[in-house]
Image 1 (tube, helix red, strand yellow):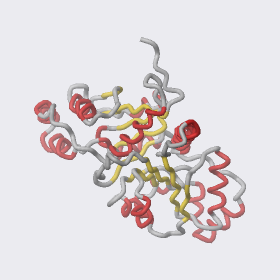
Image 2 (image 1 turned 90 degrees about the vertical axis):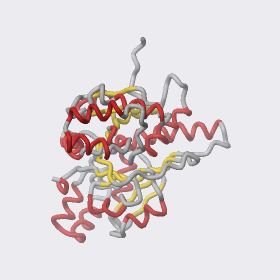
Image 3 (image 1 turned 180 degrees about the horizontal axis):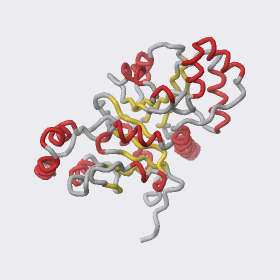
Image 4 (image 1 turned 120 degrees about the vertical axis):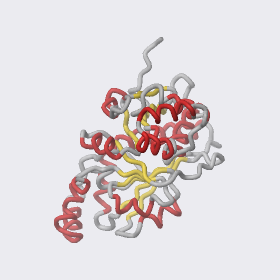
Length: 309
């Protein structure tokens, strides 16, 4: 079999806890132990798992592979699981039952799987396991913890709407540290003085760059087929406001990445915007922001920077 290269693809690692609703199985594991959990999973092997927080995002992301030949997909999703191969069988059968084009998986029998992210060229790892996500981010890996209930997945809607916070997500948290130490006026002064200096990238900058490559493929498709409807839409949703907005915009340009629209909210509750924007996933570094959004929006906590220590 020829070697399958991942270098030029958008590669996502997904834990079964982010893809499916595992509340019942997890309760069995916690309350009755590993042996009972094994028996439970074997007994329910053919019971398809219900969809989880990240399922609509992953389904839509994989659907973009219709832009490329079958043997050369744009997007690759790989399961990274703490299950062992036996208990992971139910996850793989559920993936097949839901019609997801996911064929690759790593099962680690109780150990953290995120160490394999660099080897697999992953630009994102999603899990409901807070410890795994925090350890991955501490090592400089792009990871996030899914929050909130599973959202209804409208299968008639093929659009993919993704929203990012800026500081601590796309950018590093240097300016957030200025805000924490010097307050809003110190932050605004610092950002105005440094407006022309791009931020250092944060944990998800490269994920956005990979999304932009997919968006360029969509633009090529529309050039060749004018009736093609663009599906991927990326938004920036940040608590910044003028004059601090300029450095964010200049940083994106300096990194060579783009967003379709930007919301500079200046402290307005982000959940009010999410109810209109309706992203299929929203990334933020602050749990206080996500407490509101996660009630109705599939949300991801990126535990990066000093504020998350």
